[in-house]
Image (cartoon, rainbow, N blue to C red; front, side, top):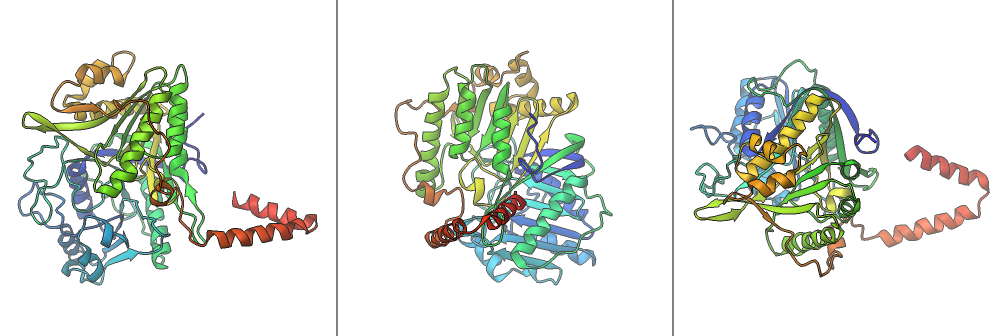
Length: 496
């Protein structure tokens, strides 16, 4: 069975001329800086957080802050508009500076720069997509917001002098991913961004003619002339229908894996994901499963919900791992003569040499049907695409193990076994430390409060009133002749 299925595991499939996986924030920010400077008509930024004080190119002396860069671009080009839409609760919850989002900043004082806070979301729901579109011709999608604490290089040096907050203070090393794409894929992402803007503001953005090519000249595509799947998550809220394509894409990818599943995840707590992984582990001929995840949490609440539920899900998977095919790791980087844990903010899944998914959706409950998310999926149909996906696995494992992709490829051997490569190469201060060394005995069910603090779908305080009304309507229908039941069935059919 194919993993990508429009209408089930994705919203649509679009032919894309070029697509590249950008590994870590420094690479993404460098490519974004070049693409923004090529913009001719429109820049649309959709995010969980935004801070105009960050610098996309801290490696270049005198590089401007992001807000000043956007201002200079619209001043130099009378046809260019910049629109920015950010989750409203970011002013309280996210790491960026809140006052510029609420009161504005000097760089925003221009008629063709429009920054809005998106308050159209259910209680406790987050707008979590991380999207940038340029002229409707190029798009960036992934896990990296344009905010504080996202820039880093693949070396993840503990003392990197460039990894600083706008206040000049060091921030922790972080591993993340973003994807760049053009062609019909970029146009589809642009349509998604326009739809999001309309839901949040009620305004319809003009469609942009694709007359420019913002793609950076020195960015060599990983993929060429390939169909890409765009998967979404959106909550069922008010008049809006719920969408759970990202979760369905994840489930299908796990179920279809035959040789290996490689996951990079900030969180690992979603019960349905755990169920699909456990079923895979119980198959006699199932795939190896390697998870590279964050081992620490920011604050007591995240530790309580995400940390403890992660441990319980890992314990559940260990019990299912009857054939010894599971390993869960935390990446570490050198810190003098010891090692320090690395924050994993990536949301990635690689299945065999067949499939890659990069996006914003985490493997936690709220990414299933509460937050808005956007993922990109590519399924290989030829040997060249398979080789590219395989090389990406080698590159990512090589980054975490501190060695070249070729060394990972050699260590995997003819069996293409990530577990074999890790066992052979995981011997330095930079490497992967096992997270699954906890005792197999202990609780596996989610902790108390999970349904409130990490819900799968919107929390509706008045659900009991709607349930009562729905029950009354069903009782009324049961007393009504057949024609009304047929109309009800028709409504259900039209909604599927």
